[in-house]
Image (cartoon, rainbow, N blue to C red):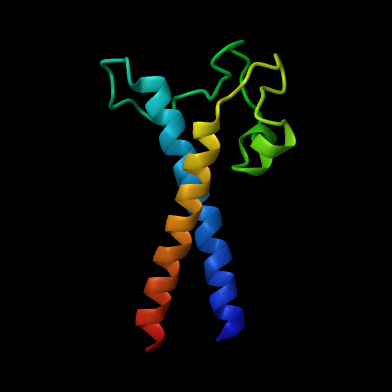
Length: 107
């Protein structure tokens, strides 16, 4: 039970942080746009300041933010702390949801 619970919490945190990162980035990009419902697969993830297309290693939640000290790897512009807060909050929410679901399934 202990290993299963630990794996579930880590998986939930990871998935939740990905969702939190996506939601805050999507909201930041589209809050002023009238086209809220766009095809998410056509969106290109770019730096808001320099416009460089981000690579996969630039989009790993929490790790990328801490690795680059909250700045864009390409232009050095500050990203802002709200991204990290959303990623951590999403991770905690994801871990909580996984825990509650696992608790219901086992008991």
